[in-house]
Amino acid sequence: IVVGVTGGIAAYKTIELIRLLRKSEAEVRVVLTPAATEFVTPLTLQAISGNAVAQSLLDPQAELAMGHIELAKWADYVLIAPASADFIARCAVGMANDLLTTICLATSSPILLAPAMNQQMYRQAITQQNLTALSARHITIIGPNSGVQACGDVGAGRMSEPSEILTALCQYIGQTRSSRAKSNRYGRADARGN
Image (tube, rainbow, N blue to C red):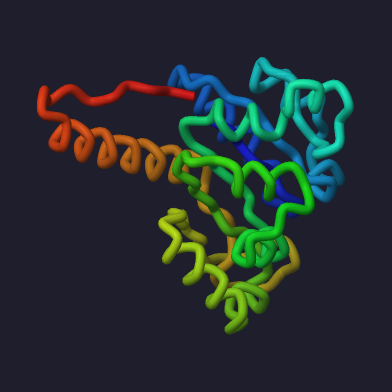
């Protein structure tokens, strides 16, 4: 699973999410946007995931092997948590101006995202239009929850809890495997886990 982390205070929850994914025996590779590094460190995420953290679309070493394409092909699932309003907007219009948005455009694997932002930003018509556009492209939206936010506001926009995100991912995987098994004339589900 490629776990994408965008800039937002909810990024601290991603550390627990990665721990839960690893406990579930998933192999995890983390991709940070530049803004995410203001909230969580690559070293922490490397220690939790057990893999090097990717941060730059223009990393000379990674791009020797077309790193952004390699990650896009490697992933069985791409999970973005938190997904900021900025990332959602860029993804909705198909931008590829950082490593994470490029991976989202280059992958044929399912993409799931967990929005996290201020309640007013979440309620904006443009944010709702962007989420609708992503859903129409079969990107799965997980949450968000309602409650007290870091800024003191109350409302929808809190990133779902790591356990809720894991449950939603497992349900999605179970549904897709069930669909594959039904469509496979031999009745065998494809068991992948990156």
